[in-house]
Length: 323
Image 1 (tube, rainbow, N blue to C red):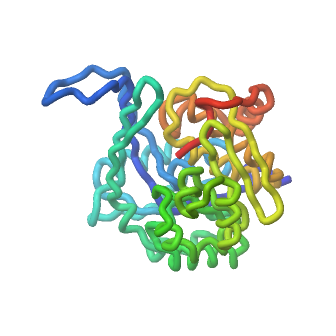
Image 2 (cartoon, rainbow, N blue to C red):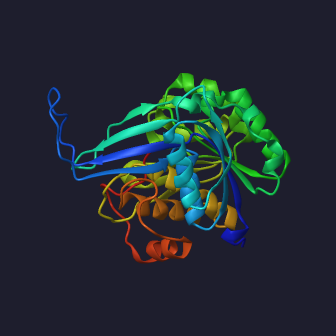
């Protein structure tokens, strides 16, 4: 089995700076102010958030994406560096601000968001120095919808030819038109890592297994989907695997889907079975859910494995990975 320290992941695509506001019941009327419990910044995104958790789990991580030349970009880059992520692959642009979200977290854990796409919408494959992918063992593409299917397919095909395994996660909500937009990339993805709402929306199927099988038929090697409070579902051409979430006290589910992706990717890179990788993904998501933001808490791979070994599964509510 490969050790996590031998895993080098290129985290390509969406990088976001999240601002979490805790203690929001409603928006104040007019210009009235409101005292809240906490305001916190954290690196996030289907590439950036996954990069953070992968680094904590022991992988070497290189981020590739576009951020602005603004103070938000400075803060995002610095936050990634603090987590041990190599940010030399992040290009700085004057064309758009750094992508950012403001997330008011309600007492029950609900988390509506205001989001600015910003520089993520300007990122292209041409922004990647492909020579720097040498030495990587895996390429994770977060947000292929921003590149478009043909460009994403080009990048993933290049990675495959270089011997890298590949994965995709999407930021956009499920919509059949979105599937058409990125379907060219699916045959080059060893793992597709969406959430349940995306999968059902993309395919129009009535149940999750049927929906996942449709995506496998469209070319994805494996679909590992986060399934709300039910945990995760892994579907290949030959297997259907269900993995429950863990019993925890949820603080904030922001970034849990990215954490699941990180755990699943690392598990597979280490040589774990699909089930074992999904368990690691759910356990990584549980670490994030117990704090505020993708970089919540402090843990490493040994701690997450120990958590998974001692923590019972949840039957129904509040502890599963989601986007």
